[in-house]
Length: 224
Image 1 (cartoon, helix red, strand yellow):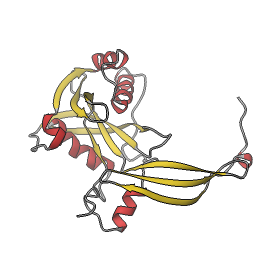
Image 2 (cartoon, one colour):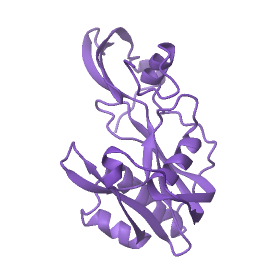
Image 3 (cartoon, rainbow, N blue to C red):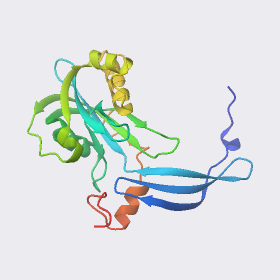
């Protein structure tokens, strides 16, 4: 495999940007980007707030999973408790703690960073920070709305969850990454990272634009 030196690498720059769609939880923009050789090309990008997810592990090495209807695929999927970074000023950890209560009815005493991932870098900004949470206790879930009102819940041993990933029963990409990395950590093959590790791939375009427009604290509430 050949590699280019830093001085030889093309610097991709945006010469024009146009907002095509602005919806509550996503937006679509078209950028004109300079290409190697002197030309330029259009790239359509789905903007996103970013999200967090939680691998909550109990004393028996079981993880909390939720089942939620996803209209994009027309079926219910087993997933990790998760949520959007859609409240202005909230950190990733604050959001993760709130989502764990709202979706799983759990609180955790110990938190660590499991991994960061970019879900669809070919066309979307979405990036997700996945935490590991341990020393759990049950709390009351607040009332749910929309799809979450129909959300299922189960505990699954980490090895059973790993097998469910490999057999195709768990296909949500965030859950797949979180389960496999958590299995590595729990088996002693890998380690988590500190929760204050910078979230360098967290998307900012839509959040900054909404805040400039005064759409806060809930940045989804456009046109209200």
